[in-house]
Amino acid sequence: MVTRLGALALADFRERRRRPGYLVVLLGTLALGLLAAPVGDSRWEVFQVTDLHGRYTSGYVGTVTALGGAVWLSLAGFGIARGTIGRDEHSGVGTLLAATPLSRIGYLTGKFASNLLLFGSMLLALAGTALAVQLLKGDSDRVDVVRLLLPYVLITLPLLAAVAGCAVLFDTVPGLRGVLGAMVWFMVWLVVVLGAQAGGGPDLLGMRRITASIREVLAADGRPVGGVEFGVGLTADNRVLGSFDWPGLGPGEASGPAATGVLLVGVAVGIALLGALWFRRFDGSPARRGAGASAGAGAGAGDSAGAAGAPGAGASAGSGRTGGAAGSAEPAGFALAPTRLTAPRPGRGGFDALLGELRILVRGQRLWWAGAALLALAAAGVAPDGPSHPVLPFAMLWPVLLWSRMGHRADGGSTDQLLAACPSPLRRGLAGLLAGIVPALAVAAVPALRLAGAGQSRAALGALAGALLIPALALLCGSLSRGPRLFQTVYPLLWYGMVNHVGGLDFLGVSGDRAPAPAAVAGLAAALAAAALALDAIRHAAR
Image 1 (cartoon, rainbow, N blue to C red):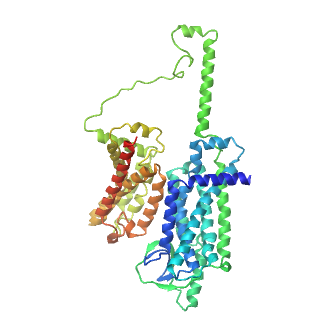
Image 2: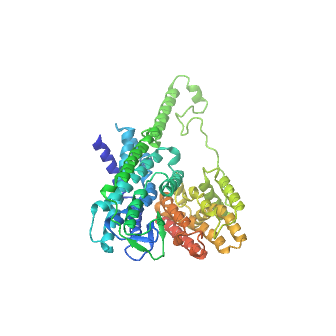
């Protein structure tokens, strides 16, 4: 049994590591490791200590990179960990597995183990980056492998085990499989992973033990520790910082984080196996339903043929009508309705294409416009605060469900094959882009008007430029990956950087003069849109 589960987990991991999303997240993990412990004069930080910066010992470098990996992979890694059960269902692998003696619990355990292998491979690469950074920085030539790896084992890996379990659970709950699940997880990540360090909730990042150890080191050096504050999150600090020498967490200080880690792993296993309440071993997969329908159709045809040759069938045959499906290409009771083809109305081809793309985006989201109206009312009733409108950043989260559909037809059946016959992919691409801009303007227009009415023209233009940028980004991400996952991973990180006033990521201008100029944001939007349209045109020409 263990061998079978190990083979399932290993095969699934090998398949997923070949996907582009794995490479994107892995490169992002390594880049974050370099940002968390920069070799040069960079002021970017993942672990902040007021006015201070630690010397690059093995313990310090291992801790800051482990914390950065925990924050990054708990969000971006979730995007590539989930979806594997759906792929098995739609590829037909699930139908094969349903014919084996593998139980529901065994299958979900294998998927959970595969997610752990996925995260473990990235943590190994991140730990190697941390070691290289320590040696290149040269603050300490003494390599302590235990203190370097201990934060990964005690903090990052248990947290990612919980993420792996949640990814399995989200794959089994029908309402959480799509874009809605990605947004639900983003909210969970904000509250549980980032918000926990500010309150008295579970210490998932081990911050209490880490900060207590650093305070002890500072107090031993005779430094005041009353005003020292700590935080985790990607920020840039241009102040001149002092330094402190902290060796990191040792084995004797690991009891608290270790207990939390063991508890997290146990919770992770329970969360993953909880999916067995909804998972039915692909008994209702499309392939099995299709096979059942085909068998039913074949049986129906045979029954009709038998009835046609039975006594009494001659009356029906003599009437010149076929009874049942015996001599007909159509099922019984089925009639094709005549269709009248009409020429497009002059001057309305572009508008009709835009309307069609907009209908595709909002399909199945009947209450979306009601939510947009509520956001508009909230924005109209709240005065601008500071350099931006307080409702604007949260309003720009509402269209994510729609933007994730841009640039691909993951659930559109044969739509791509039908639209491939269109003579102008550029017109179709422009219609798709404008369809994505319409929801953005629907949620950003009222905040922009309030900002313009308050005399903040730069902020108003920044809101409109951001409303152009995100649909263009969604179109490019969808065109590159042919699915929603890339945008669902990139946009929450971009949004998080924006609300934390990271100047280079502030696409809405909420940080005022530190944000990029609205013209620069609009120019970037045009470049992203042009790249997406060019990619679509190349694909169309290569057919």
